[in-house]
Image (cartoon, rainbow, N blue to C red; front, side, top):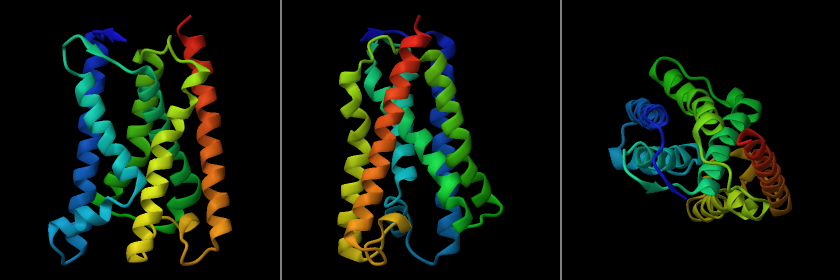
Length: 205
């Protein structure tokens, strides 16, 4: 779908890209300051987390959206990425936030990645994203990034023995339990995709 978004939409997209980038940088500075290791090691360690990688995709995607040029905006990808960010924040606050406590810069980075960016993207998607071409045939796209990440996290964990989240930790849980957790998460993403398609169709009326 080729179009130029209104200036307000592009400005908000640029603000979201900067917010995600600033949160990632703050998280890097916070984590690197706590570990006496090379910067590349800190970056590689961060790259095992869904939230970090998804926010990197946000920076790239929303920086492209902010350009004042006629561009192709893939409505299914924007919806799927928005859902991934929102699910990341939701799952973190419901199941993971109690596992770690941040202070100072880490606190700001944590809430930037898991609270501010998801809320900002949800608002941008509702008010500015192209949604009229969303269709239930697009549902596989909502599962694409979570599936790729799941395979990546398990493969990386199998190599170095470090799993980013307890519910996919094969060192602690039997494979059937981890498979059940991953299947449940994919079902949640699928249901979230259905809801977003329904919201998109209603909003564009």
